[in-house]
Image (cartoon, rainbow, N blue to C red; front, side):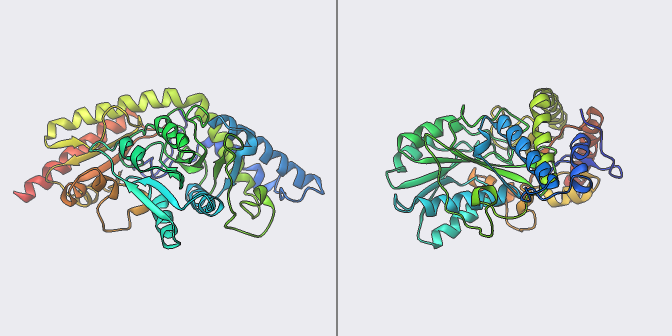
Length: 390
């Protein structure tokens, strides 16, 4: 377990929003800010070549972490940029094939909003439903996918409920239709095994800050053969990253992301087992409050994540009552919006039920003591808020 970060007595249970940079990751990054500060594109001198070598080594480590080849990894600023580059780039590159794109209603806003933009550009977008537990309707997919379907976008695991999607089954359907599967792997990396070849994924995005790496750096995986995935670049200004993502490469961030991936590979099973046990303890201890229901599937979900519907308690009031407990009402990317969670709505929850729901996501440094303290504070706040309503 990594060293516990100090943050003025806060109990941080929002690791699906972001994670602290592991101290070991930070130490690996520091020399590339100060001593080895060369531009990786300046290969005419030693400083630049050292930076280029560091990026090459990092590309190998990251590729190994997801079962890819180094040449299939493109470095970006994070998952949102990767999503925009991939979805827009594939749509334009394969426009001669057709104009149909498929996704599901519980996808991240980065995917949904990018596809909304593509719809305004003349593409036909199908957003498919999910079941009450968040599972994709595969029969609906089979009935709607066709020869003019360019690609299908499905996340590996949902950021709000933790639901783990049947990616391999979807990949089989997609490939039988001679289409491409894009997978948002942002929440999966570091929590569950994720291998692009085992799952038969053609393109995927990741973000370092979700697995104890730095913010502002991520990657896009693009399969090189069977099929070779093509992108039409949407950014211009240099030949970096094969001309797909121009701009001076973030050497410290890339080095940090690669080291974070290495640590995930060696520690994620122990971390996941511990977090799963802690989550179960938390859920069971809260049962005595009554009126608490787990949103989504209780079996096929990330080991660190729980989405809880608490009858009679508004999530914003609950979070205000316990400011030292860092939890959320859903995705961090939509926390500034007043609308109920689009994920929970897609699963059939009413607006009121969405506003009664919170997300708790544990992390590598979560302790059993924090679980006990958090449960005590939650119970007290729930009882107090319910009493005020009577």
